Length: 281
Length: 106
Image (cartoon, rainbow over all chains, first blue to last red; front, side, top):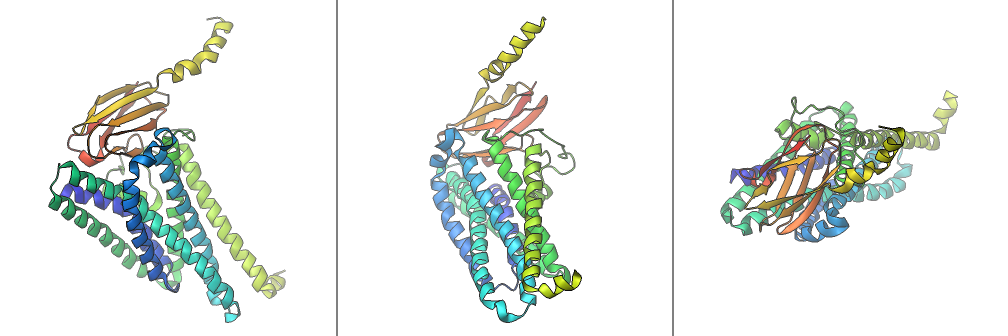
C-alpha cells in the first residue's frame, strides 16, 4: 500500500505546489476559490480521459506523442503563469488607485480568472492522468489488491494535499508588505521551471537539440529522486543535470515575464498618472 | 590519412553516426531485457521501449534526465544522449523492485 501511496504522492507534489502558490498569490481576487476548485475538478475529470487516451496519444508523432502532449500542456501552463504574473503586478497598482477604472478592472479580472482556471486544470490534468493510469494498471494487472490500490492512492493524494496546505499556510504567514513580492517571484520561478520541463520533453522527442549536456551535475548534492530534489524540481524547476537548452528555456522565460511585467506597470503609470511622469521630467 | 580521405570520412560520418542508433528494450513481467544496454558515447540514440505487460510502466532515469509512460502492450520511443562515457541507471517507476536497468555509454 505504501508503494502506490509514494508514487501518487510524488505525482501530486507539483500540482499541490502550483495550486497552493496560485491560491496564495491571488489573495484578494474575487471568486478565486471557486475558480481554483473548478480547475481541480475539471482537471480530475480530464485525468480519467487522458489516462484512457494514453495509447492513442503515445502513438502520435512516431511514438513521441506523449512528449508533445506534455510539452503543449507545459507550454500553455507557462503562458498562463506568466500572464497571471503580469496581470497581478498591474492589478496591485490598480487596486491602489481610485475607483474610476473599476469597469476595466472587472473585465481584466475575468480574463485573469480564466488563466488561473486553465493553469490549475492543466497542472492537475498532466500529473493526474499519470496517476490514474498507474492506479488502474495496478488494479487490473493483478499485481496488487484493489484495497491496496485504493488505500495507497488515497493516502498519496492526502499527502500531496497536506503538502499544499502546509505551503499555503506558510505563505499566508508572510507579512503583507513582502507577500506579493514573494508569491510573485515564486510564480515566475514556477513558470521558468515548467518551461525547462517543456524543453526536456522536446529534447526527449528529438524536436530540439539538447546543446551541451549536462551543463553541471549536482546529483551528488541533491539527487532528483530525493524528496528535496522532487520538491525543488516542482517549486523552482531544479534539475541535477540540466542541458544547455533547458537552461535557455528557463532563463528566457524568466526574463520575458519580468520584462513584460515591468513594461505593463510602466505603461499604466504613463497612462493613468501623467502628473508623476511630468513632474519627474 | 590524406586530406581527401579525411574529407570523405567527414562527409560520410553522419551516415555511420546515425545508421543503427535504435535500440529496443523489452519490458516483460516488470523486467527490462536487456537490462544492460551499451550505447556509443557522444551520440544521440533512440530507445524503443516495448512494454509487453498488461500494465503501464514509467521509464524513468534521473541520470539520463528522462521519464516516459509506456501504455500496456505498446511501444514508445525515448531519445537519449549525446552522453559522456559512464553508467546511467534507469528503472520502471511503477515496478521498482524488479524493473531496473543500466545504460552504459562508451
